[in-house]
Image (cartoon, rainbow over all chains, first blue to last red; front, side):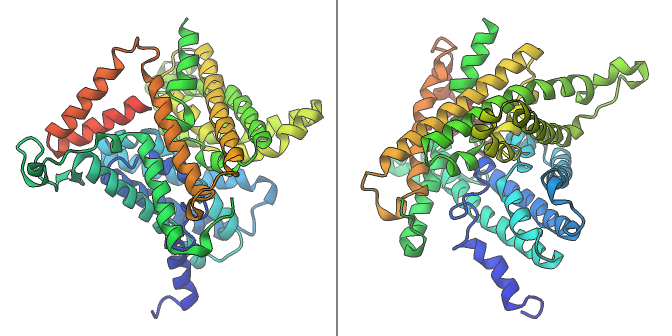
Length: 215
Length: 240
């Protein structure tokens, strides 16, 4: 770890588990749940958020001494909106089908609470390199949850991963389907995303008692 | 009739929280007490009712492909739609600020009950989501856009009111320790969303929507991966 000091590594690894933006800080749930019906969309969403949050944190951190605190929300929103427009245009150019699937949720990265939350809590008080690491760490933590949810929903819901049938062919009854296994179409519907996240929180808090809330 | 249909649809079928998960952050953070939930819900209705029609005008006369026609023939093929995000969020942020100032000046009592929530609202996904859905669903007139804004706001209000009431009661229940607080709220919201899905057939006469769900489910199991993604995409659109 020549490049990263111990403190810097902590910035990246902390949000992955014990300070996870979704399950502990309760940020960024808005756009997280609706697009996790398939793994591919979850991965693309995580990468987009990583781009926006990493760069946005650097930009805000560079400007932190010249932003008047009264209008900082509008400045932050403008920075995020500009970055999100870049993401949106790139997706439309190179992954049109996917950008249709994500529909308005790419735009909603702007109001993703993780981004505003990290700007307010970290980038406004720290230097660019630290802010960059913090952005990457938090978007990784966000991505991990998205990918876990996307993994289970796609696997149990349609029996595929990234579009590849991993459990066999449901029509020809090969693989698992030969034993009478059926896909659970319910997993693809939006309410299941909430319940899967609820279960992730349950597992995480059972393993780490310190995180338990008292109501 | 058109108005009533869109109104009911945006409250129940396309409910912001249960169908599209918009505004979840403040929904989870501010739903511990009914009284604060009511305050925030009212502020959301208020701001949505103002910003959706305003952004509709912007979209119609500035952003859509060919929207600049009113400036003269040479502007007819301009397409500024890539600027929608930044325009919408700027409108929302300034409107929220403006509403805050006006309310403070003219109705201090309303300001006391709504005031603290207004800054929170600029970054509430439900507000931007309202405008973006208004754009992507191509709502045809200013009146309908207003109806859509108010309807979505009321839908959000109902959702946060319901969860706040449940959370007040659940304090007296014996929830497994690891699920307390956030976990159980997620699961309850999921169950409520399943309940709200049953409104899906309300305006289609019941027959259109239900077989469609079954059909997509069948296709999902029968086609290969690439088809699958499209079907899921359709599914998401139907849900939204």
